[in-house]
Image 1 (cartoon, helix red, strand yellow):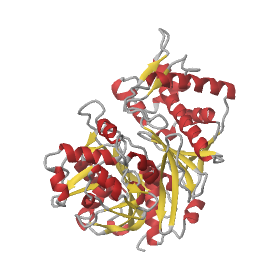
Image 2 (tube, one colour):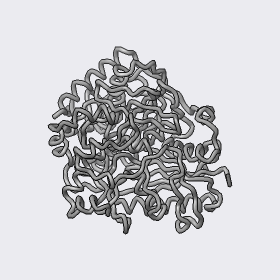
Image 3 (tube, one colour):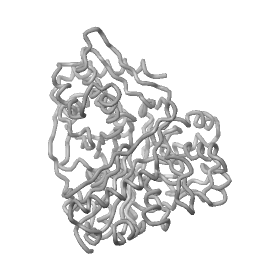
Image 4 (cartoon, rainbow, N blue to C red):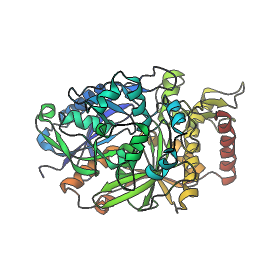
Length: 494
């Protein structure tokens, strides 16, 4: 092992980042570049995969430059990524044949409706742990094969490759030498059997997706390949990879059954470690792979909220009610309540536990006395109510004895929000010293593979809480507020 530094690539939905960590899991530098999103039609969300790649390389170069380090100072690289986002590219040129279709995209609703009448739909949840929904990669692949000229013929001929963002970045960074994905990202495609740990031939056949398109699935810790020396001056081993939510759970040291984390980024994602047990949800949650390291496979129960940080971005960029995201904490705390206003942020439909692709956002309870502060506070409160939606469903499915909720992501720096979440869900909320847990989790995985860390237990011992929030609101008051939310949500369901 050359040095104690690990480089984490974190390709999110709204930005590209590179972070440097020392062996103690402390960040010693980071560089971020914003990533564009495009909305060609209602419900469509696209990105430029080549922009992701260019940003990634530039972030890696800048973070090393800013820290006065070179490639020789890096022991290994880990990658975390926005999941489900779908890219198909030319095997020879490495160029995408269509823009990346982002996980939030709902264009494949009709395809899912068509597939809902096929025999395979009865097997999907049992095999993959997922529901038939535009959220996942499978229907996005079908759409590209059906709508891009010659795509199906070229795919069948082996000229094209599919990957989620991790696979695409890996292919580009290794100059086309590695076409892999990890088990967590594979488990979000609706094509991967989480019991057999293989791409499911029956599903592929039913969806007419050629198996030759797909990457090889390996553990979260593996030698995925080497970043080509062209990019940073020397080759660097890429030895860790996970979808961003699973990477965050690893960064939060949620290694034991009953531990749960919530990441508040573009969306909000709760992931409960269920250990060796695959829990098939009765409340429209998702069974997924939490991590796969050698013989150790841990499963999880996940709930996904499509819009969290995007709500604040909407307040800032579209409504122009605020200038910066940080203002929301001061504004929300400046009023006693929302005066009955509820915001339903169904900008791209509703995720768990509703799964309504056609739902749209709503602002309810407005009067002539409703102010900017009431709307801003209602926006933040909606994140807490959706968290309660997911937790209630998880408790109903798992009967887990959840003691506290570990939180991370950009919105986790908002103390007012975390206190309100604690009040609404009646749990202690813990924020770690490092809130960049997706990147940290990717770094930990890379370090595990090269022997920098000997075990998950060693990583868990290094986790530290920076702040704790305990419930303060009377339960009768919090229940009344949540009942108001449930009434409002019914108005937004299609």
